[in-house]
Image (cartoon, rainbow, N blue to C red; front, side, top):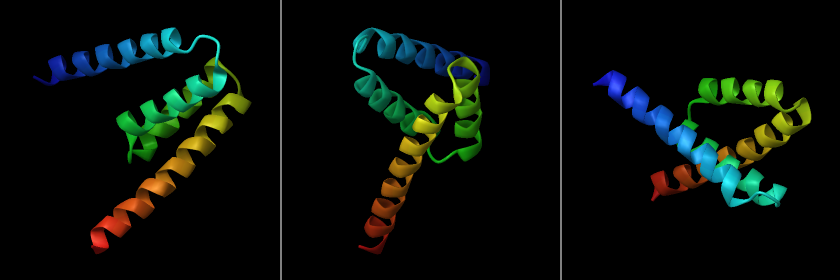
Length: 90
């Protein structure tokens, strides 16, 4: 069962990456926003997994791209944490 889940997760991740590349081939900001959303959906709140992904981005692209993604995700995580705390108080 775990092997199948890991394979499905890997297939979904690969398909999302293909869709990401195909969907916004000329607009870097939309591509960035889509990648931030993908990181949030697949890695929130697993900071260790996200850090591994950011390191991979830095190796494959460059430090500037990794820092931009890291900062955008950090801002989104803060917003989600604030929203979760507000909902928890209600």
